Length: 211
Image (tube, rainbow, N blue to C red; front, side, top):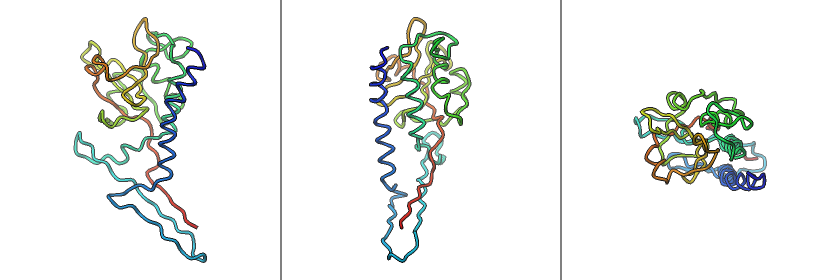
């Protein structure tokens, strides 16, 4: 794949993430229906510090509270997607985990997450699905989440990285190359099993300082 096209595609995919991160820094989160306000003080007043905790989200799967489930680390997510997109067109190779030797599905995921020190994924898609990360409902998918599929098997045997807007990047099978596909296709929709969020969460506290 031509370098220019890869660069253009990377920019298109990562711009929404950058915008999301910027907006979050500018807005004070609504906590349990109440938005804290910081009132002006006199010039002689000391600095005022306000710490706001993000609301706890409930998991529909078991009704238990899962703190910060939706707090996606946008910077690390961008890095993961960038590494994956940069190897678009690399041939599939069973057991492969590098641009020079090719990729299988889990090898591509391991490669994309290689620079995230807090994430140590196992080598197979089934092991990744079994014990790593938090389960995410399909409607709550965020870029960087892992998607798992059962392809002509009783257990998970395929993994992909979610890009957003129902799209994902993966290493499909022998004879194919690393490519982008969509959950809107009947084949992938039918064989979709579960999604996991493995990226570390962002800080749950937001500090606002007024001088």
